[in-house]
Image 1 (cartoon, helix red, strand yellow):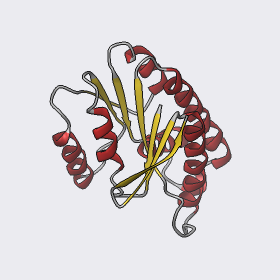
Image 2: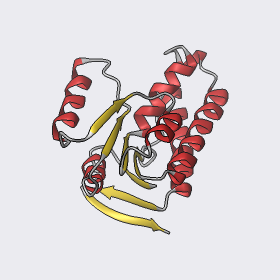
Image 3: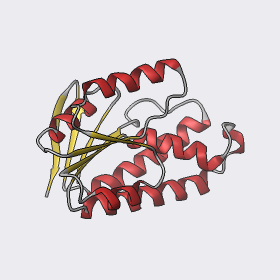
Length: 182
């Protein structure tokens, strides 16, 4: 597994796509959900820059099972991105958008369990798996409860992914830096 991380607009997806283009048969797992017009435009922009011969699977549930099922059909699976994946799962599992009603301790356990399962499957997959994630803890401590808890969950999730990855790249201003290689 190759993990590609960095801040917002750092060039993570572009870099991950360049890595994936080294392979012939690529499955792009897109975890974004279009919840408004602006997000729909972002999704369309991502779609338009992918090679036409790549296949796309859109979703954010049952990813370990999907990768296990698809790993022999492709040379490479590109999962973009874990940040949106966990955002979607957080709201799915909490069944509310009211952060005061969320059980963050239980949500964290559930989400990190999902990430651990995902990391183990990606690490052992028979094809190359490239995972994109956001490094969201580089700024100030967020003012609201939901953002603070999500930042903490993402930090722990990224640690799990990095521990299981054979290679990790950190992007800054579009420049990839290899920070781990086994």
